[in-house]
Image 1 (cartoon, helix red, strand yellow):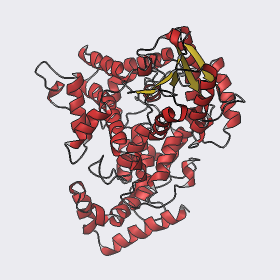
Image 2 (cartoon, one colour):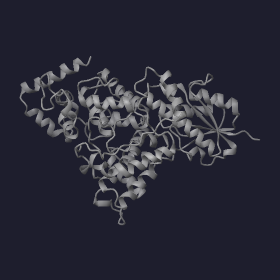
Image 3 (cartoon, rainbow, N blue to C red):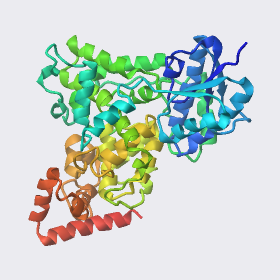
Image 4 (cartoon, one colour):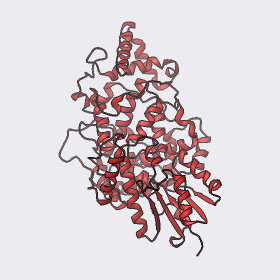
Length: 511
């Protein structure tokens, strides 16, 4: 009997037809799945994020065994576990004496570097397969980017619409006569009602309970709670969550995707990104189902288009930017922000009700939706001048769907403008008025959203104007910031000084 092919399956590759298996023979292959300490601690991931990934991996191993594959599974608490991917490849080679290694490309630069050194280290042929779960290959994105001075997502998104044919009519034009219905997707939150959709909550089974106990014992100094763990950890349950979203939340997702409500972490959002990003759900199949719902008259166009844009627009785009820009992207700091991340990002203990809500639900659920990430925690970090790498690490730690390829460009580029405008045409900076318009947070806050200065003034207000003043040399010529700067110049010198003093005193209070 000839030696087998060793096929490592990484924790975000939980897809039965992953590219490394496309031409593999179950009778001639060994799948290697590894829980390693390096991957749980290179940043201090949220306890629930670790539990979710490990449980999903263990359930996937059982699924692949049921499909006829031989799975060599290394648990985190295995006394012989080396703690690293390369160490576990070394041990697996000793066990199986493979003739070659086949693996699907890694999603992050850090892991890609490991994979690329295996052939030389182990003196074995190593075939790295492209990850075909994405619409846009690295080469295709590089070609697209090379023809442009600015990498605007909107134009990339239109190309992906044309490529897939999603929401394209018989004349080759976008459904409804326009590409983007975002202007219809900014409604403030409605009154809370009993018919608000709720995502499914999955009771942990024996495998998940075992993982939760392991995480609770081993990662005591990591952020987050395990008390609210309700993730789907199997393909079947992820499909059930998908069906719940399509049936109950998608029809109003467009209208309220930017809305925020106290005590309501999920609203009309899908809660599907953790399952898409680790392979339990197929993103293309999902958006095709969304299109079918629109064509059947079950979903309005603004909802269908808005959701499809998040998947084939933003998700594909930020992955393209991540790989196109290279490993040094994470060190960019165009606005020279140097302040440390405040301690309340790990506790939620702050009088700013909006921040307490976004961070509190993050601690409880390892989840916050995109507007909470962009316009609450991200906006505060931008306005306060917090060092981008610290904010990046926090986002990577705390969200169950956060992998570096998707999180880093969203954080450094979109939220913090640290790439100098590569992703966004302007900084997404806003004062308290935006938060008040899109949420009920300000009604429950001890600060007054209408005040700029004074003991009770909303911190976002002074911070917003201080941000513009502090960065005027770099931002004054941005055409999208002309009006705010003109408003700043219209203020009296005394008012400007008072606002900047208010911001300085608040920032100094952060420590």
